[in-house]
Image 1: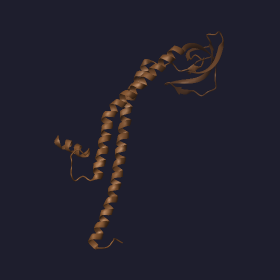
Image 2 (image 1 turned 90 degrees about the horizontal axis):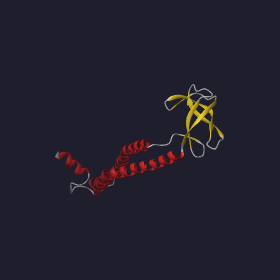
Image 3 (image 1 turned 180 degrees about the vertical axis):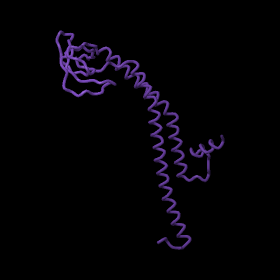
Length: 197
């Protein structure tokens, strides 16, 4: 157990190694900050973002449920549209007529199951402007979307932290290679007494 802990302390720059160069200490401090962001900021960001998504969707669901209404549409004629796969079933687009609360009628285009004939009735949703819409959001929609958000946010944060750590490592390695080349050039001058050709 001491071995992994010792390696972790060394990776994070907590081992007080006197042989560490300044560049190594800076890289270790950056890794420590990134680890703190992941460990401490991850849960806080997840709770905040999933809670925000849940509250926003619940407010939208309440607004849609108050405004949207179910109406009955009468299919007037099928349109010459290719049948497509919608919502897991074979559907096609047709023209239909809807009776409005004001007493008038409105022609709409809706997707219905394949085989629906003129004169058949289907139930659709309309908003306060008499436009065809999807069914209103529900509490379950808000709940599961928030759960999905809570699962995705930590993954995205971990990917961002790993990317940042890799970028810092690449920069430090590039700097180290530059320092090595300079040190070897100076050593060559000292050993041979002249600059390398």
